[in-house]
Image (cartoon, rainbow, N blue to C red; front, side, top):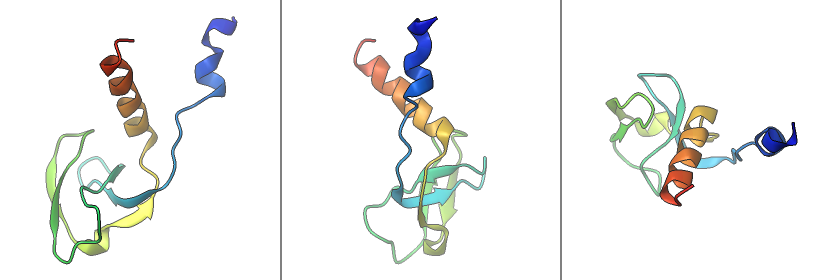
Length: 83
């Protein structure tokens, strides 16, 4: 019974991301591929639906990335460490 409680009591963290955008394909919040606020439109590739789309600077906001992406990134990190 207690073998699986780690996932229940310690969910992946979902801290705010400075540059987030809502994917126009799947509608999920994903990190924007920028380090500073852009002056012109950018192209972002969604890691969830794999769609590449254009976004205006007004589409970028400070927010939380979606839970599905947090889980996907966590799984990739565990695979990379041989777990």
